[in-house]
Image (cartoon, rainbow, N blue to C red):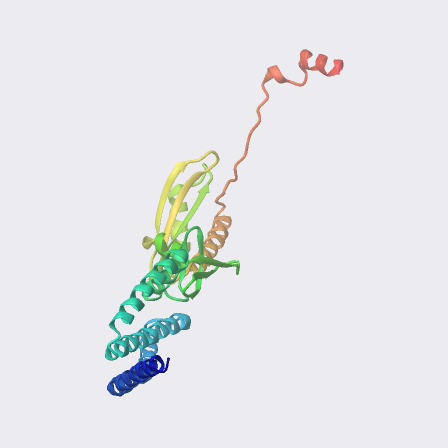
Length: 300
């Protein structure tokens, strides 16, 4: 019994001595690993601030800037962790950690597929110079001013002050019309005049009114005017001219102003803008004096 105890004690002492020797041997590596982790922590803070400043010059959205800077900090700290494990000769632990991270990342990616798609789409939209906050855009049946682009959605404020929130993925996968990319817009104006009108006079008058109303139109010849059809009650035409505008609201105001001035000019010159009418004609067979019709009324 005593011999067994002495043997066990000797094995324990040998084991402890082995551990102690290992600790003494790995103390420099352990200190170096700690230094690497501390260095990576402070480096992550510095790099995160640097990335935030650089990204803020390209992206106006604070949420995007913050997200990118945090991701950068996490990458730097993770790199420091991997280096520390390598210094400690924990290759198997490092391999297991990478494998586990890959499995977890795959599971999270599948579970959050839609969210991640919107996140990456938000990052892409934030770096697109052709889509900026304050632009007037039209997409997926909605039009309005861009008031926010974040990691989840794309927010528009329509002309009626309603807020429309659209997933970033939808914006990226569908056509988008940006009215703010150009400083000029073309106004299309359709109208009709009576058949008795002097068509050449109507054309000249309309061009002169547009040229006087808008400073951007230098002369009447700059206005495009085309008669398009013989309508049911009028001869219809299409008038086109350019204005300086960057949003649909400015275009609508210009069109409204043009309609008002053209109506005033037409009224002054006696030019008729007819509205659709229907004429009912009763021939002799349907006369109120018809014996058949009088008999029908008397029977009722």
